Length: 311
Image (cartoon, rainbow, N blue to C red; front, side, top):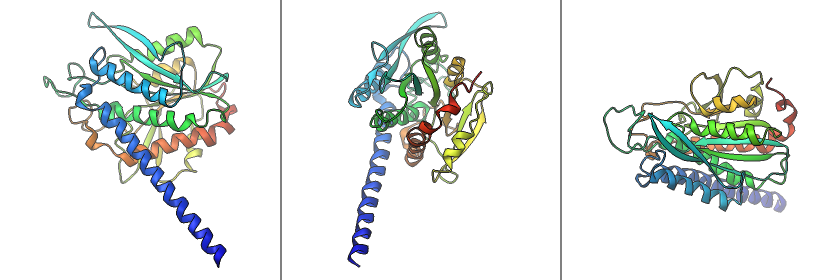
């Protein structure tokens, strides 16, 4: 009877600490969204104070996770022309290491619409567009993954490269620059999977579903993602080809398996109402958990099905 009681107590203690850890992760995810979508960052438009603050925040997080710059600097400069004006921003790139030939990329764009000067759904409304779901939520999950996966870096048979894209909203310039530099400098590396995160903060509480949107030009069997889903609980993943403009469209030019996780669009898209108070914190946690477990438990045993999967 004593042994049985001891085991029961051990179970309760483990459950207690696991529950507390889950709640802590949810709070950390939401704190990233709260800061990035705060008025202080003024909508994170390229070449603004908010853009720089977002970059600094991401770099500080990478440093705290002991991630290294993938190139010589965390910042990868971007210059682009927008309506005849030369603008600039940066991608922020970090890695768990440079020991392995195989790489996994996890990305999310951090910029948004500023005061709605362009691409806003609210015409002539000059006001801060917080961009909590678009895409502070994606950055939050990426940052949480960089924290949780850094602990496994020595155990995994691949390096993980984390990329925060700048200048997405004005024409996917961040991912274009990343692909351009990768082709020039890293063609010998093998990217076995590139996961992009864009608008993952509005999961429906009833269906708890999210999507993986991929470019139809690939011939990779994304059923691997569904196979892993069978190991998860409380999530409902759907695979959908997507022909629009997302950063994985540029990443696909590297002839790699890639796609974007998202919870889909909503009425607050590109509006001043896309604020942190509307974020589904538990939904972000479920997506973080799914991707974390995918990379730690499933991907290492299935590298062969990813390599050379795209012709």
